Each structure stands twice: as structure tokens, then as C-alpha cells.
Image (tube, rainbow, N blue to C red; front, side):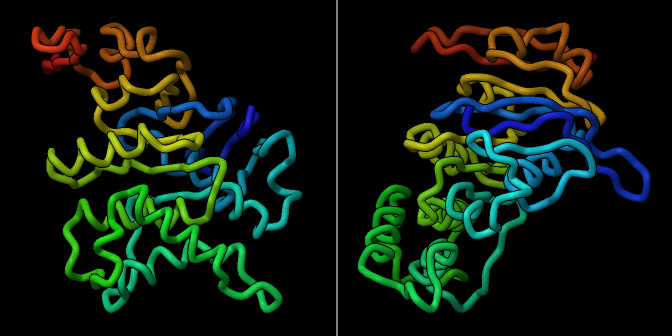
Length: 253
């Protein structure tokens, strides 16, 4: 397992936001986190990324307690793309992606050819190499999300964590971003709002009221009884006659 959490909990003024969550993510896995709004998904992701220290429990990265690792080491190995990520308006795409190299830089190790190679590779990976000189404020929502992902990839992480990466994007941008994420050669952990997007994951974890209530492959998780219980909807699994893809259709109860 590349990343795991045992008995994770986080409280605010005595109120439990996340309670006793235990899970493990395998190297190379596409791991999805689903649940209603307010179920604790973002808080759990921030704990797994080492951005927020858990109130209870422990996160381990390749078997090592995250709390005992230097912050720089964690940042070199785990990258987080947050739901509300922003950046300075008057910054170019290349400048924004170069920020992803920060964990690797120091007075003794300034920006080098190796860092330039990592930045260029990240831009190519998300298809933004021709936008390198463009300013942030000229980009569309989908283009900005690609740059956020490129900045994370420039860190050269072993684990990429994304908090609802397609939130607020139009359908074309959503499909493009998900295809991009699915093709990345890293372990990915993503909180997903769209349950049809979640079907492409290797495994899914379901949060409800801050607790982990189900964990397994999509075929076992995205079933009518569980979706009725967690999301309060009736779900029907349909097959697209064009390509045989499975699609979930929802109705209110």
C-alpha cells in the first residue's frame, strides 16, 4: 500500500467532521471518494495529503507515519489539487507550473535543467505546452484546472490527490479532465461528485456523516440500495447501445 489511514478523525470545536476512517490505497490505483455534500470528503483528503493533522489516528506513506516525515519530503511525494485552488492573476502558465517544483528547491539546489524538464513534461502531460506564455486571467475554467494538475505533476509525486477536479466545469472540459486524470501514470485519489465518473475508478470509498460506510469496486458500491441510503435517490444502471458503456440514471425518491 502506498498511502493509508487508520482510525482517522478530525474535530472542530468538539464536533466530529471525520470519524474513525480506516482505508488503504494501492500503488498505481485509481481510488475514488464519494458521498453527499458535507460528508467529510475534503477534510479526509487534506489529512491524507498531510495538509491537515488528524485529531485522531494516523496517516502512513509507504509504511512511514506522515507525522514523522519532514513537510518537504511529503510535498515531494504527495500532491494535492484542491477544489478551490486559485493563483495570482498576473502570472503566466509556466510560472504557475514552476511553483510545483518548490519542494525540491533550496539555496543549495536552485532551479536547474532537471526542474525545467519536469515543468515541460507536466505541461505536455496536460496538453498546455502551447499556453506556457499565456497569463492566468486569460484562461478558461478547464484550462485553469489543467494548469493546476500540471503544477501538481511538476512535483513528480507518487500520489496525486484531487478534490472534485471537474467541479463547475462544462461537460466538454469535464470529460477532457477525467480522461486526462485516468491516463496519468501515478496513484490517484479523487473526491468525485459525479457518480458516473466514479464508475471508472478501481475502488470507491463512501463517506456519510464523516464515517466510512462502504469500500470496494464500483460494481459493488454503485448499487441501488446503497445509493438510496446515502444519496436519497433511485438509481438504475443502463447500457449504452452504441459502445456498451454502463451509465447510471437517477430519479428522486
